Image 1 (cartoon, helix red, strand yellow):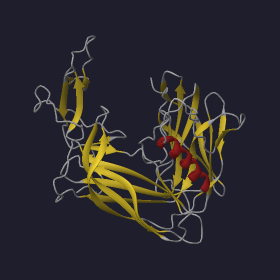
Image 2 (image 1 turned 90 degrees about the vertical axis):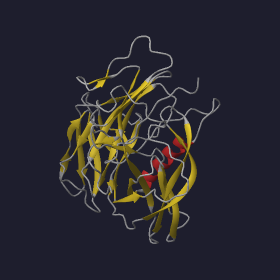
Image 3 (image 1 turned 180 degrees about the horizontal axis):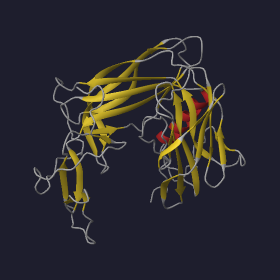
Image 4 (image 1 turned 90 degrees about the horizontal axis):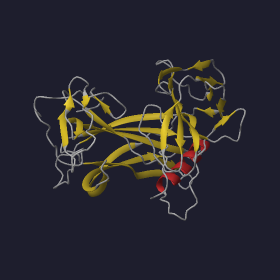
Amino acid sequence: MTKAATMLALLLIMQCVDPYRKTFDYDDNLLTVEGFVTEDSPVRITLRNTRSTQGTSFLQTISGAKVEIRAKRGPVLRLSETSAGVYESDPDFRGKANETYSLYFELANGRKYQSTEETLVPLRTAASYSTVFNPRISVAFQNFNQRAMSSLDVLADFNDPVDQENYYLWKTRLFEQQPICLTCIDVEYNERTQDCNPRPPTPSQPSVYYDYQCDGDCWEILGDERINIFSDALINGKEVKGLLLRQAPFYSRGGALLELTQHNLSKGAYRYFERLKQQVETSGTFVDTPAAPPVGNIQNIEDAGELVAGFFGAVGTNVQRIWLDRRGYPSPLVIPLLGRDVLPSPRFDLVKVPCKASSTRTPFKPTGWQ
């Protein structure tokens, strides 16, 4: 077997729900805290336990906590639990430029935690974006098959301010129209439960796949597990051109929408993301030292030795959405979202299933969709 795996899901930007994933080797329960204060969206903090052993791992949401955002020159902001392990501010709340914030929370078992203070410094330079056709990249699908595809590579250009250190983070979300809302394996769809029937104790060999069409418009939301950070340490005050942020595969010949969120980071936040990036992108071997979980700026008030993953910060933000027009490119390699051709279910044109809103799918037309 390969290394024992723990999937550490880190929600590092409030409005995005796509995780970074990394394999760690340890036997423990790891508290993971995720969230930021920004100028353009409410606060959202997620609390989870990553429970792991050398053989298994799973994420467990943490409910019943008391969570507060404390401003140095303002009132305490109390968050409400809106779903299991997710704590949100009033929808109208926005962070203020140059205000200093910290996170405090108390779990149901009485353990208390707090973050270091983070000052919200407005983003001083917003990037512009362009695309370049890439005739061939390799894309992994859920069945772990690697497929050759064409892509539109999205590049960032920006002018770095000269009079201070600057640290940047980008998050991207790709919206693709999704015609298939459910795939059942070896069984058919149950219209009463709105789900697949239970699989038989002895599945067929090989498995039989039944794809079901959406009953209306539906969009897949594809995050990016790569960590796009940038420091101006070597280029302070110069123009940055052609920084690769995302490769958007040709899942169809129609267009797609890409949302790009640019943040400026404190030095502490950048160092945390840098460590996380090194761990995410470094593949280990059997003789490697086991990876340690990335520890951020949150601490148990009464037990400084407890490891806490994640980072709470305050960041300036710029959000842009660009339309990716895939028309007119020479002989692109196109692979559908499923990574294979559609396998029609019985009564394919009659039985359709709802597009259920989630972190990875929406029935609502995205802003900027053409």
